[in-house]
Length: 185
Image (tube, rainbow, N blue to C red; front, side):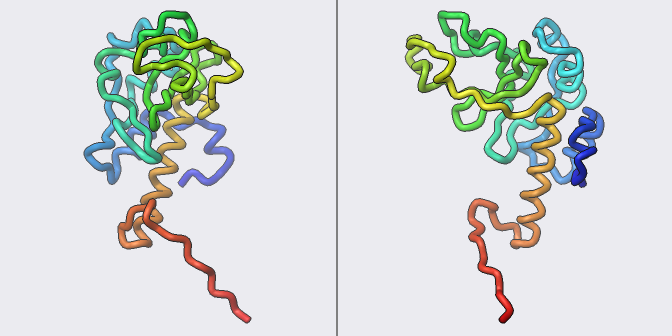
């Protein structure tokens, strides 16, 4: 489906993503478009904003990603607002989802690139107490160069999982054990 380098360089459009995602989709992973009024004042680019409004993101998808449905209606908050931090760290990182207690963010200072930020071991988020923050110790991992690239990757991954499940009698991908190759002597 998306096997060429050209398809990665040319971002998927919101219309194409919506069309491809909505085929064979489970109820829990249906796309929900963002409300224009709710995200119009978030300082993301127009390209990112329109993609989120036109197609949205799935509420949940493999590999263990969650795009919390409340942000579709309440808006996108930066990490400071989301976790009620006292300082101004991460004010340019807008949370769009999570993966196993790691925030998935749009970094508006870096052309809306997508990052995973695991700051739970730097800040004690549960108690709302700030610990000393040191940027070099905060695990920030690049995820995608744009919201369209993120959408493309989750679509490719979903298709990969579906293909494996289809040849393995719908068995969960996590339960599949590698098989040894038969070697011809």
